[in-house]
Length: 185
Image (cartoon, one colour):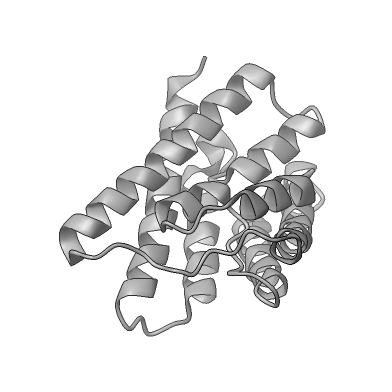
């Protein structure tokens, strides 16, 4: 069990969720998907060398499915990611005195939409993991893949494609969780 990696996943998911929350609560200068993509790209550069920079249970499960991590580490990552997201939610509620946010749908269409967006996102992540892009481009590829994945998923859902962030912004549903995980696999 590597607590350093788990801590990086907790911190990264905390930051990603908090930025998404802030962009939803206040009038952010950039759209939420752009803020999420920029944040994730930066986090890949800052923390990716420690944990791989998943910050998303769907990505972790996707990496588990192709043998890039053990079940034990995947479970630790997923727990860390949800803890980070929930802590970000508590901080945002404390700072902004508001709960979030989006209308949650729990239907097949939302699940399919999340799956398609997550598949596109995970395709970009996998190219980085399999070293098909130069290391110096990893954050950019992951960030742009997230932006494209969110854009596709947003056509029929909230476009979250991250079960931990969905929980952190009080927009969790089985459709979002199952769709994201299936898309990543």
